[in-house]
Length: 395
Image 1 (cartoon, rainbow, N blue to C red):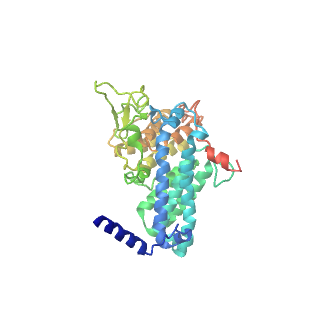
Image 2 (image 1 turned 90 degrees about the vertical axis):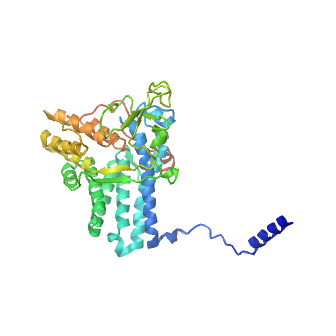
Image 3 (image 1 turned 120 degrees about the vertical axis):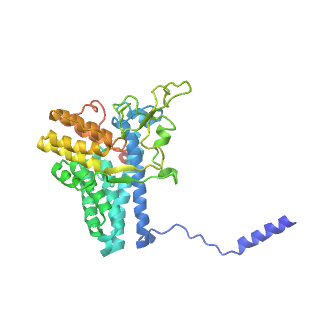
């Protein structure tokens, strides 16, 4: 009887309440200054999501890691082939990050009006747009903007340079040194990509060696993870085995051989490759660098090699970066040796940060002392995604 009375009371309460489902939130509700921080957080989330795949898949597009697992796309990448159907998820995520940032900026411009150029969130939004375009420019074979035709991949670099330049102006208006360093360092990498080495070096020299700007990750949800531990520490989908980084004693290349119960080296997920795991990202909440002061030193070193053929000056910048990491100085007797050191140092300094594939691509196309042969016979860029090819009438 008590049970029946309780049920009756609950039903009476439910049916006596005047509850209305508000339905979906109207898009126009976002056209409010209070929505701006949330819009920018969304841009950051999409950038980080695209970047985590770039760093992981890029590790086998280039020479950061050896593929040692069974997942289908990386297995194909390990052969040197990069196909539209295999990279489709990456293409969609990278394009989403770019579109959300770029369109969000225009929405915010309409919201803030005269306050647009003196708002910290606007500076951050421009950084997200700049870095998302850099991700695309450094990896794709062709640029495709919002359903348009194929364009040269450098279109992404040009867009990124504009966004970083605007971010510099806004950061100056705010007197925000952290955002200013992020924008200047981002633009330095873009100017280098466009071949403006003097401009790149001029930007790079303004950034302190200890500076870092990062893509943000956390363990709040799966989408916010960097996704490295489950693929490398918990399961051996990728291994340091067989790369030039294997066994190198350098704080920038943390790694560990995984042993089995018999104290032999374990095999990774494919059952054949020796399992040597990376330890750069030990938790899913470890952030991934988008830009660093040590990279700026390497940009200045490359400028000296390319523009001035001054290998002594280049080695000076290289050794400044090594000093920062507590490493001994290197020496070179000629420009060819200096190029070898530069390429090795960039590989170590930005290991597993999604930048190596671009470096190998541009050095592979070089006909001089900078030539690097790793990509010979391999695909050197990411093709247009399958969904874009099927849905874009301009392709």
